[in-house]
Image (cartoon, rainbow, N blue to C red; front, side):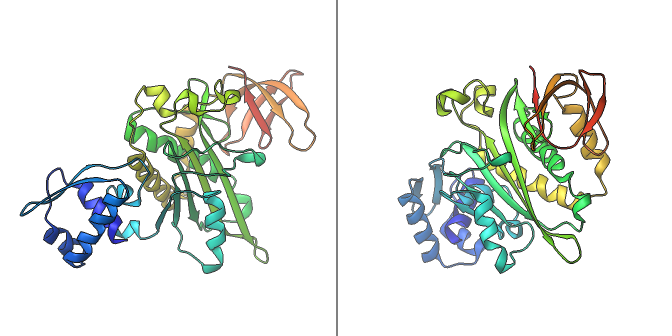
Length: 326
């Protein structure tokens, strides 16, 4: 962790910082600091070293280093954040850790996913050096029947994180996707395990993928008309993934602390930004594949979608796939 702590300090400092100051701050020897700097240079970081002045970070490859994220969070929070260069799925990595009982709040962040997954078994394209692929472990004190809204709360948390860092207001498409200009930029996959005897949630893994720096050509041809990124929307392909990842962690922590008492705040934000309301929609039944056409009237307080169908019936949709006719 020394290398990440050194990188975090160098990022925070605008000028040179002495090896003695760094060693004192993180409680390691000067030799350890020097070794960490050499390791960072070997990774491609450009660090200027000047006698009697210390070290100054000039640049670092965009690989979403742990140290970059640590620069935005307090030291205690960073102890449960693991950054990896490439994984099949951050959810899978976190699930593999569950037998060892990692603490709630444990985060896995990857620079790339080779097998990123979305809802209904769909793939989530996760190329290196472009997006944020993050999973967090939650342990809310809730029964299964009461937890269905957590995925909508998560959409609000990510919406708030993006707004706070980049001042970009995303649209929320029911049930938990974030969109910009009618194109998807974020997917959320929530997986849970249950204590069978008492019916209480034992673990929830919230997996989030955010398209940050992708350019149009980074998407396969079949997705270029439906997927986008924060970079495409803003025209800025240098947006800080580390700053956004840290903000997402803060918002997820806040969500966890607020569950379920602060429901009105999350519901109001969700409803105010739900782009599905007021649109014609297709509702697909997962079990049968049947598609019904209707109009999204409103979002109910339990986050279900009130839809008026072509035959005149109005129903509250709680499951299935809802496609918006833009």
